[in-house]
Length: 427
Ligand SMILES: NC(=O)C1=CN([C@@H]2O[C@H](COP(=O)(O)OP(=O)(O)OC[C@H]3O[C@@H](n4cnc5c(N)ncnc54)[C@H](O)[C@@H]3O)[C@@H](O)[C@H]2O)C=CC1
Ligand SMILES: O=C(O)[C@H]1O[C@H](OP(=O)(O)OP(=O)(O)OC[C@H]2O[C@@H](n3ccc(=O)[nH]c3=O)[C@H](O)[C@@H]2O)[C@H](O)[C@@H](O)[C@@H]1O
Image (tube, rainbow, N blue to C red; front, side, top):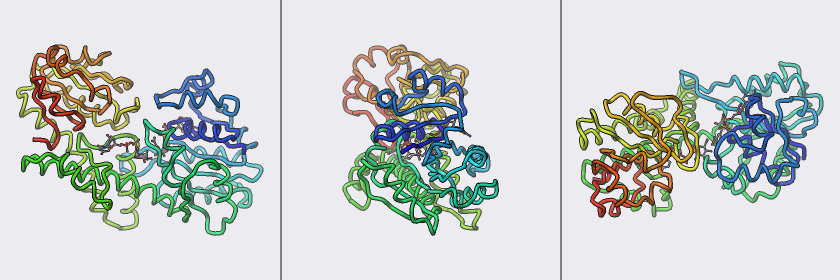
């Protein structure tokens, strides 16, 4: 199949590389010339394990440009542009609108237009109406909603091994499901077919539910602290129940990234637009918004006064195995520390601070970060931090406090080396 992907970001590039690997001829369009230049020189503009290798392997079937005339040759167009949050929490659809303008000016023969970007309920129906309003004949295209569920850090694996493929179709569309099945031929997953809006809501419900699990466990961690119980015991205890499951029950600094925060907000906004009061979604966000303060209060109690202290923060990315810092709790924590009188030495194996911060330096190794530090905070749960030699850490530090903001360390190993361990909900 000849496929055109629009948007060479985390989702677009992964989709492009995987579809090329599955045997399709793929062209990826992005309006960011810097990205296209890098890609044409064999470089991936961000860190995603395995992606560069897959792109290189498929370079004969995978091309990149900013040229929209490629659309003319494609049977399938996959939209993967960003849908960031507006200040009021609603999804900003300006990139989708720009794509519709380009499509309207280019489409001359039949296309299956697949929306992979996460868009609010009703958007795909609106997109169809917009294309017709902009002059595209209704018989020249079908819109399919095919939301993406990959995680950054394991995007390539997730796309080859999805737990389901969700396909939202127009009511009278009897041909696009087969097109999507041909596109994904070689990937073994159950298909969930529904309406366009049904698919959009499946995506929001999935992210909102996962965010809810995280806020739930973070609230439980606060209760565990009050009753001197280890939250990891509670998470393990409830996780055996198959109705609950063991995943997404790791308490910590709260959820971040480019999707959970924006998608929960966008769902809240969408609900309100139809006069539904989303109380649970509000509570989920309110727990998440206060989680860093809860952790900082703990740190203050252990270390007060922060003034004049040196704090090593390990982790800047919003999660391990990515260099993405969008809505990163680790970076938010560093930002708060920056204004609290201490100095911060921050280290991350891949991510860089988005902007310079007063009293914060980014260093190149764990060793540099912890040198003479009064406290060490784990802000992102990279494997590199789990496996530190705690005796060496103790020897390098000035103080003894290790604050495990991701509950990812072996507490006993830390304590055996003479350091003081404080976790989230682990008194
Ligand atoms: N990052 C993730 O893990 C996941 C993201 N999603 C959703 O997928 C969508 C894309 O997310 P990411 O890949 O993270 O975004 P991203 O920001 O990494 O990539 C978007 C790309 O689209 C390009 N773009 C924007 N407007 C364009 C236009 N008019 N023409 C050509 N290119 C254009 C940008 O230059 C950028 O390279 C979002 O709706 C997001 O919610 C869904 C599942 C996972
Ligand atoms: O729509 C999206 O963009 C994607 O959002 C998430 O993927 P991602 O944001 O890459 O990362 P997650 O692994 O879900 O982690 C999100 C945040 O939650 C935090 N988290 C996760 C799990 C947990 O138990 N506790 C916890 O605090 C992570 O540290 C991170 O900050 C979803 O997991 C994907 O299925 C979805 O496709």
